Amino acid sequence: MEGPLTGIRVLDLSRVLAGPYCSMMMGDLGADIIKVERPGIGDETRHWGPPFAAPGESAYFICVNRNKRSITIDLKKPAGIEIIKTLARKSDVVLENFTPGTMDDLGIGYEALRALNPGIIYCSITGFGPDGPFSSRAGYDLAVSAFGGLMGITGEPDGPPVKVGVAITDVTTGISAQGAICAALYAREKTGLGQRIDLSLLETQVSALVNIASSYLVSGDIPKRWGTAHETIVPYQGFETKDKYVIVAVGNDQLWMKFCRVIGKPDLADDPRFKTNPLRVKNRKECIGILAPILKTRLRDEWVKLLNDDAIPCAPINTMDEVFQNPQILHRNMLVELDHPKAGKIKMVGIPVKYSESEATIRRPPPVLGEHTREILGEVLGYDGARIEELKSAGVI
Image (cartoon, rainbow, N blue to C red; front, side, top):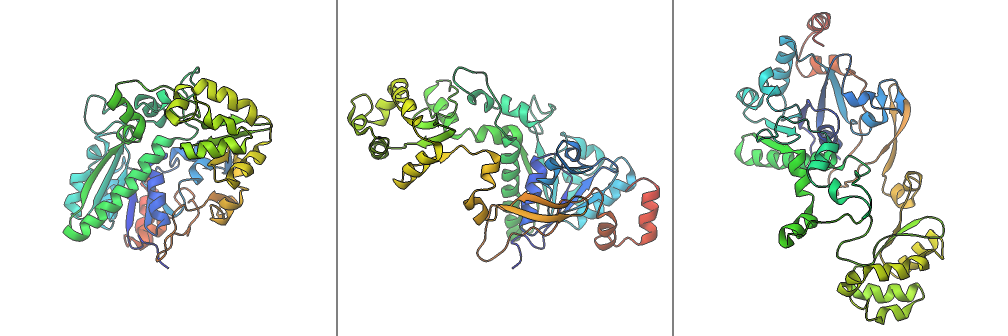
């Protein structure tokens, strides 16, 4: 089966994480992704390591660049800009995450490319937006997660703010960009016209605050850091067991009664301090103080089995090796192996979305820098060997 985006070509000038994550998702769904990189250097994440699968092929780069073809083009040279314009004429989507104004200065901004291809979908990812008082600030996930409130609500109650374990603001922005591009492609089916998509790390981050932002906007109370706990549900957090850590998520009073029975304390269910969730929230310290020593009496996996057998939501707090040995992860094909031209066999995270009538596939490993330059110039643009050699000699590619 073909992927749902088969036949769509994406000219991807983005780098690092948010943009490449977006284009990889589209590549998984069948789109032809042409990744434009700087000659000799490439996407800076190629060098973000260790670990490296091979020289210039960092684990970081590998994780978001499969199903792409790499072409190296020097955007400081007029001939390089001309290649971009010609590729844009033959593409459905342009994706970029340069600082605001850079693409316009290069002569390949939205208005310039729309004049060449009225159907182009032009997606621009910035840190803080293309306008406004902070538009010129550098947009790194760490800074935006602090600025946008995420870091302020992450960490233990009595500890400092901490970052999330992955660059989640970049990831959510990449997911938002992919959805927005697909929506614009659908709109083009009806109107025949492309459009510009403008999204930023900051706005995506603020929108992802969901109930925490809503709670503040409704109450005016500044949210606290809760560690693994929940502001309005108790018990709903991590507990230390005899050996490791477990998450327990008792989301309603019926589950509370079952939970008390499973842990051998049925009397707690009728304790006037804990009978309802609002009471448990009010008396959180006393409730957790009773539960914590009980959870320490068994091994983590014993609690996971006991609680799951009674349909009480819980989960082990897994380490990475436990994640990729888990039978559910393996059953759902979330660990895959493929051949890389420099690194040999490499393992990657699989594709999270499955379709009944289409197929998301991994057709290409993450590309070596400039691996497909000749292929793209020849097959897509029709350049002959002499023209390609001329561009190479001039340092354009």
